[in-house]
Image (cartoon, rainbow over all chains, first blue to last red; front, side, top):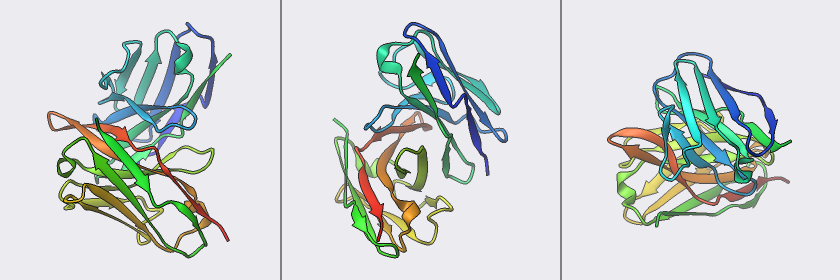
Length: 108
Length: 122
C-alpha cells in the first residue's frame, strides 16, 4: 500500500511569504495527486488535481508540481485566509484513496 | 448549487450500530461516484469507502472492512454508510464527498458535506 508523507508538519510563515509544502509517496503514484485545504470547523476544499491543475475557483497563487513520488504545493504569496491545514491525496490502483497526514501553515 | 447534507450521527456504545445518510442535490447524483471520509477529533483525514455511480464498484479502507457497508439510492439522491461493530477509534466527523471528473479524469473530491459527528463511547 502506498503511504504518503508530508513535510514539514508545521510551517510558520508571515503573510506575503512563499509557502512550499511537500508530499512524498512511498512508491510511484499515478498522475492522480490532489491537494486539499482545510480550515478549522470546515470541510476540506479541493485545490489541485492531477498534481498541477487548479480546481475551479482556486486562485492562481496556488500551484502544484511533481510526478512519480515527489510532489509540491506552492502558495506564492500567503494571504491571511491561506493559513490552514493542507492534505495531499492519492488514488490507489485498486480504487481506494489515501490522504497524507497534513501540513499546518500557521502565522509566524 | 451542489449540496451534500449528512445526517445520522450521534452517540453510540461500543459494539453498536449506526446508519449515516447523505442527501445530495444540485447535480445528477446518479452520474457520480461518492465517498465517505472521516476525521477523528484533532486528527487528519481518513478515506473510509467509495461507491461508483451505479454501485458496481465498492471499496473500503482496511480499518472498516467487514464492519461498514456503503450503499446508495439514486432514486432518492442519497448515499448511506451502515456502521456495525463500532469501536472507540471510529469516533470522528464523517463527511460525504463527491468525486469530480474532467473529461473522464478523476479530479478529486470536489464537493463535501459539512460532516456529521459519530461518538463511540460507553
